[in-house]
Image (cartoon, rainbow, N blue to C red; front, side, top):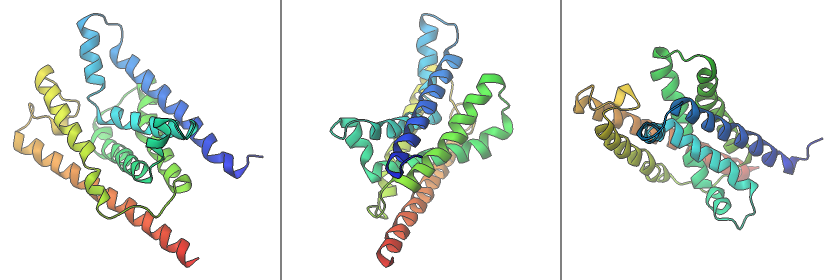
Length: 215
C-alpha cells in the first residue's frame, strides 16, 4: 500500500524517467549516424523545437522535487508560479501538436512512440501533477503575462537559427516559406493561446484557494 505522502515522489520519479528517456531517444533518432558538422547542425535543430525545450522543463520540474530541498534545482522547481508556467507550456505543446501538426504528419516506429510520449503522455502527466500535488492559492492574474518570456525567447531563438541554417522546425511559423506577416500573425496567435491557457491555470488555482477557504 503506497502511503499518501509518497505518491507525489513515485509519480514524479516515474514520469521523470519516462520524460528523460523520451528526450534522449528523440535526440538519437534526430541526430542519427552522423559526425563532424552534421552532429552540430542536428543538435541545433534538436534544441530548436518548442516541444523539446518544454519537455526539458517538464523533466526538470519532475526531477527537482526528488532532490534535497536545499539543492538549487529543488528550490527552483518548487515555486508554484514556475510549475504553473511549465504546465501552461506543456499544454500548448499538446494542443498545437494535436491540431496543427498531427493531421499532416504520420511518424512510424520509434518516432511515433517518442512523439506520443512528448506530445500526449507528458502534457497529461504534468497537468495531473499540477492538479494533484502542487500547492494552490499563490498565483496572480498578471502571472501569465510574465510567463510569455519563455515563448517570446523561443520565438527569437528559432527565428535566428532558422535564418542561419535555412530551416524552421515548424511549417506554420516559417519566415522563409511564408511571408513575415503571416508567420508573425501565427506567433501572435500562439502567444495569445499561451495567455488564455495561463489564465485558465490561474482561474483553477484561485478556485482551489476559494474552495479551501470555504471548506
